[in-house]
Length: 615
Ligand code: M6R
Image (cartoon, rainbow, N blue to C red; front, side, top):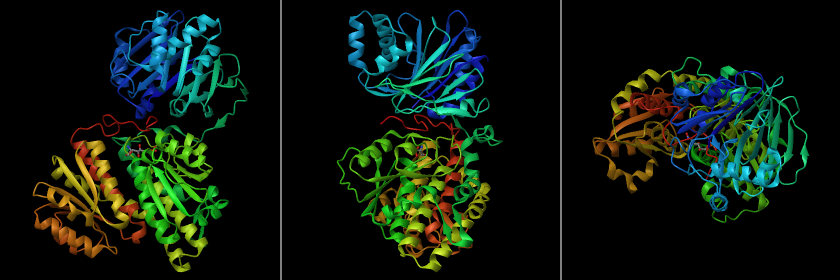
């Protein structure tokens, strides 16, 4: 869960690497480092902290000249975040230098062997072990760097995206990938290396995504040589043209990426529909789904695997799939599913949901489901991500890059895709009436407008945030389709404001959480017009009777809850099945404003990283 960047070509490498690291900070930000070849030797700087701290460190002393370099932004796995454990790491001779995203699981036994052979270690990292193993092989076997990397990687167990160069041969960088992403940008006589394409998008639209167990020797003046790490088989490079543009990865005038991404939701939900939802014609057409509809409609059950916010989107889908398509659904934390010997058969369809498409637990759950013969369908945002490639088929959410660590637009676009799939299956199965189907299609089509309307309450929500920003605890309640929204609201608040928050099904309150309620406790209740309205109103009464403070999400024009609640946040009326797409919006804004008022790092909350590529 780190970000790696590299450059070899004719430009100054330093600004490319520093800017690239800033774009990749979503992947980890507890320390950062850079190594440049200045024409005669390696210049290396690294420090605990963010990329801005690295810039300050560089300013203290190293020269930033040179057109070959590598850089790293870290989310610590082995060894605490400090200067020494930061990447890049030198080999003992000082000739080789490496950056690594991943984990070498058997590093300890390799380290013992290397110590016996006289190697000295300065850090607690697995990465320093790997670079010394490469050096040892290079010396002992008398092979070139590429070969030494290949032999070393055949001895290690774990996951990696690495880039390594040798100051004695400063015209090449060797890269390799297993389990962590690695993209190579291909320019005119220049190459870029990065965890995703964002660091090089202003320089080239051509990229090669390495597959697992592949490595490449990138040498100036020569085509890239890609080969399989295990079998040595040469692979013809497949250069893709990227659709990403620079505006998509900049803040565009917003104070934070999270706020920008919250406001992008009307537009990106439209993008999710584009060419797929033709409401007037009564058509939903999802390219990846059409051919596999029989698999879904004949499935014994659908198992949804995901983590975090994506898991919450899966919970919403449990309601729509069962309600409309009458297919039994189980929603599983991928991290639990993968380790509990689940019963999976060839008659099951597994849906894996992931914004990044790189989450390690979700990937492992997919592998397990495939081994057991299930058909696996992916719902990912990042195009070309590992999960999108590992699944049998799938649908992209088309939300565009989500940089803020807290998922916002990823969540609503995941629900959008899942809702389209559920409606389509129900229509094919005949478990929904034609009129209900058409009504939902038309209502779905208007969701972007409703989301835009919900965003108009931003100023009022900011005022509510002022009142409650210092509360140490929050409770979030919702029922039915809005129970997952309560969970998601609580997750948003805790991850960016560090305030403890719990999401609960409103009716469960009486079975425990009600004991928490006193005059200090803000309770956010999703109390929109729905089948559960009367029951939720009763739940609100119960909270009021115990002096809890009510912040209610209500349907525009609501009067009953408005009378009871201390504060309300209005959303437009939609059919109950679609409400999560709008009720989520005020909860995103509430956590955003509280976090800003508490001076938190909204886009990069402590201890987190955008894609969790380790278990
Ligand atoms: O990339 P994924 O959707 O697989 O990520 C899953 C979770 O790590 C992610 O949703 C996480 O919970 C977010 N920080 C939530 O805002």
